[in-house]
Amino acid sequence: MFGMSETNAERRMIRPSFVEEALDCLRRKGLPVAPVLEASGLQEAGAVSAEAYGRLWLALADAMQDEYFGLGGRAMRPGSFVMLCRVVLHSATLERALRRALRFLAVLLDDPRGELVLADGLAQVVLRDAGEARSAFAYRTFWIILHGIICWLVGRRVPLRLVDFRCAEPPGVADYRLFFGAPVHFACPNSRIAFDARYLALPVIRDEAALKPFLRAAPANLLVRYRYDAGLITNIRGRLRELPPTDWPDFAEMARQLRLSPSTLRHRLRQEGQSWNGLRDEIRRDLAIAALTGTKRGVAEIAAELGFAEPSAFHRAFRKWTSKSPGAYRKDLSALGPGQLAP
Image (tube, rainbow, N blue to C red; front, side, top):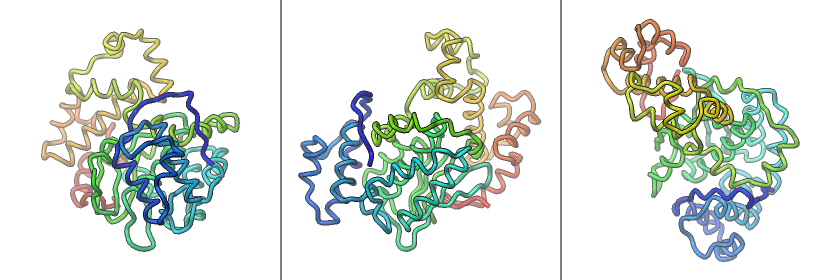
């Protein structure tokens, strides 16, 4: 079963709509809500800290004897999350760990079943349901478990590029967009998350010694540690996104703005699994894709706006990011609607 630790008092709040959706799992099974609220130390539903939501998660799983809250084809019995972590722990790479995790979850839950699809430079985890679409909360819970584990395994946040839901928009849809920090679509052919495929080659750096403290802090650590709004990197991203790439400060100037020495900034970035050049590349890539798919500007114009001295340099960089030329990427994406899988 999950454990909980109060030693890391991160106070990001979980929205009331997520609390209500969790409690609805009890109501659908005809189980009383009051004992679960009491066990988690909550007086009533509302905005709560990640730690409080973690306690609610544990109390809910205990009351239902299901760590997936009755949302799957079969119950995810207490202890399943620990077994999942052990199944993936000794994988060599993130890709191997992810494939193992999806196979294990398919055996546990039977339905939905996740599949890793590689296309267009993206690693897409596609969930397929045997019947009707599940609730947004069901898909979100699956993503929290899976994404939290893979980020922990490689010791860094794996930023999501998109999050698709097969179901219709739920109440409080804005909360979903804020939570994931990526484009979110509803009423899609399948539910899926996607991230850059290059992350699949990252080595798994965790071992048995690291597993115990991870489990003690779960599930609160899954909710906050690898959220999109955590850490120094988000601060830097925000500063860079406020400026056109041609006006971006150099590394030394960014360190000065952050009131850090260059060596400290380099160390902090490394701790979060990132580099200065890699961070700027990610933002340029996102801006390039947005311009190619959302505007009719020419490739040369986009290259200049992104700070490339020559269009040929932009072409080389874009091929490295997506394995396609800018023109081919624009042509392929123009034929796809939101939520459709790239060929």
